[in-house]
Length: 311
Length: 286
Ligand SMILES: Cc1cc2nc3c(=O)[nH]c(=O)nc-3n(C[C@H](O)[C@H](O)[C@H](O)COP(=O)(O)OP(=O)(O)OC[C@H]3O[C@@H](n4cnc5c(N)ncnc54)[C@H](O)[C@@H]3O)c2cc1C
Ligand SMILES: Cc1cc2nc3c(=O)[nH]c(=O)nc-3n(C[C@H](O)[C@H](O)[C@H](O)COP(=O)(O)O)c2cc1C
Image (cartoon, rainbow over all chains, first blue to last red; front, side):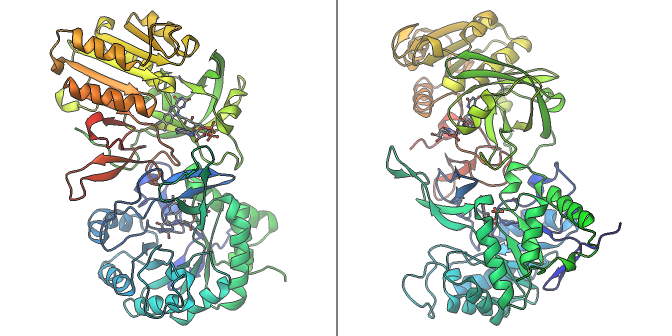
């Protein structure tokens, strides 16, 4: 039975709905010996910044119940080296490439995207709005605002500015540590984002009870993995009711059925993150799982699943 | 020096491995032997495997273990039961299966440019403690297989007490020189293993350039060994143990701070692919 797995996010037509999440797939080469990368719906790169970043000191990760905390600190070679050393390989794979970008202020965000926008082989940008310790924009609501993703006015300002710098597909990746995710998604939509990606990791912490010290050198870290999935599902479901632009569902996807749950909640496609660490070919196993579900349920067209949740 | 960049080498495989045997070798310590046509054939001393201990999300991430031994069809690990994952492993029986990724990491013998470990007349000093001992056994066996005399291999093992001097008998069988130390004095020198090492280096007549030190074990031990090596001007390789997630350079979780010529003077090396073996002098210990 010929299944139609294609889906669309912004201007990007995906042959299937499985992408890999930023920071969990390196720059793809790390996975080339495990499976044919061409089988993926698309790739989101590790977040790139204007200048190279050393990242946080160790310890950077710790496992938690059905999840993990990470505080990698955006270790990356910087935009110039990315273009020289990583992009040529990514281009050659022949599937949509979305470059994840992050900056500490609006001007820098625009600058990174402008530099990348001149390059061929990039299909879109994913704005990582969960950068800690941003220098506050003029429109920041309160001093408690720590990330772009925490404040709808800041989201609007930075997405709006970057929108002017590129005509490629623009994904706004939101953080979950907010009281109303749909408000943040609406702000991104208003500012011209083509897609919202929900969600990034949850700010979390683990303490060693013997030493009384935080386990991570950075003290706090981002929680990911299957433990966050029900919250991510709820957020996709909430946002789907409000925004018109497509949603990329992310959070603890381990199996095809997990991915289908996101699609049903309203995601047009999904990203696989932490599962890549347990099983390097998790992403295509998940794709196979989606196909198995469709075959079993006699569903021909993926679009019949998207947003099919009954309220 | 041939430095491994993050990223996969063609010789890394994911295999479903059958348990061939499991044996308790010391209190809380087990040797697990797994059948694996691909991983074992490519295993180098100092490299490791990533074992998925459960088919569920608890524990979630794979666990890293060094090779204790490997041939063309099977390999074994020696592990200490310390938590969830290793407890599950300890219950495995012959015929059970596990998902394994490997071989991961670079392995011992970094100094390819000066002949690596293949030079015949060299003295190989290996200092191990706890579950840092298994890769040194694999390395010793491999050296002997490569026609290096067991008389040129000097093993220094440290443990809390006699029962935890892991694999002591097997080292004896290899005919290598063995120096032991226990905290309680129940076997060998009473105190740290670094003392016999220092005594040895002070007494021998070999020029430092003909000696190599390899160490794996608790961080304070490796730090002390690395300092001693620097004092005697002997090249030293250390195999670090840091928390890891993926094991193949994708997550950047297993950072180790190393010296760097750049403006900051240091950088974060990714232990699962640039290591776990590093030159002792390159590591920023604190
Ligand atoms: C390259 C490498 C090679 C290794 N080789 C061996 C080996 O040959 N034999 C062996 O027994 N162990 C080895 N280890 C350590 C082994 O991976 C851990 O003991 C194991 O992951 C513990 O899993 P667990 O689920 O049983 O314990 P968990 O439930 O995860 O943890 C139990 C306790 O152990 C601590 N712990 C967990 N992982 C580590 C770690 N990597 N380093 C220090 N403390 C840790 C935790 O903080 C906790 O206190 C190696 C580690 C690395 C990085
Ligand atoms: C080790 C690690 C590194 C990550 N790095 C990034 C990053 O650089 N940029 C980003 O937008 N998200 C990053 N993330 C978040 C993931 O892309 C994803 O949003 C999150 O982990 C939730 O999905 P999961 O539960 O499937 O992992 C990272 C996650 C992990 C676990």
